Length: 282
Image (tube, rainbow, N blue to C red; front, side, top):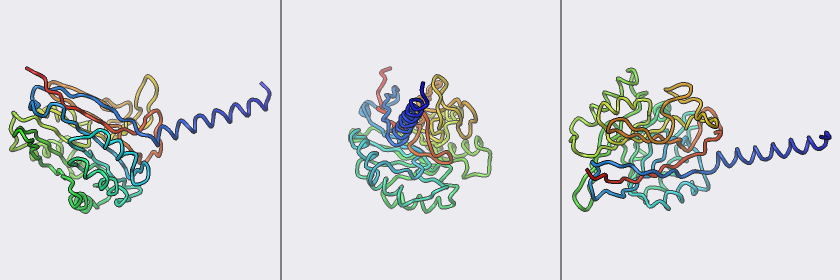
């Protein structure tokens, strides 16, 4: 091929790769899945949950319009934010609160901290601002969701282990003990927990459904291989994204919306998760 032709081919390839990288980092995929359990109360059949995770002070559209529009279209019954709403490296709380402000009238919002909130040393202020906007901040505690039929589900949230001087597993067990100490074994339990690598611990506590994040989907995903690295799990992690199940416990791991130390994603589009609860008949 003549040198002139190679130059234009190379330029064309650079443009294509650039467009793909832009699309893969600035657009949002909505991932929908059903969760089945015989413990879900019958009147909660079809209950829709939107999960947002690892926003990291990112912004999609003016005043987060891209995210808000997608959430509105789902018509959710609840919105869960599973940590790292902000980023310690470019902390912009007002920008992230702008997103929450745009979501707060769509459905009740439930939130737990991630490691980045704790790393800012501004965790209490963040929680206070979210509470001011009407967000249910779950700090080693649970709430009961009761519908018009008088049936209930439980939604709890635990602090990120970074909030403790103990090893991650021990800190997680202490948080779970504190959170579910007074909870009935018969009620369907939803847990917000930033760290998916503690899945075996969640199983030990018979949690029915966990929503987690933290992994960014591996940040860089390789075809036929998957995510390369996740904090807390290392190279080629086990709990990366999607649905996991063991015994009666199920876990959803979000790839999240934003980035932190590594500023770009590869083969790993930002994600909003939509979960619909479905009652299994015994």
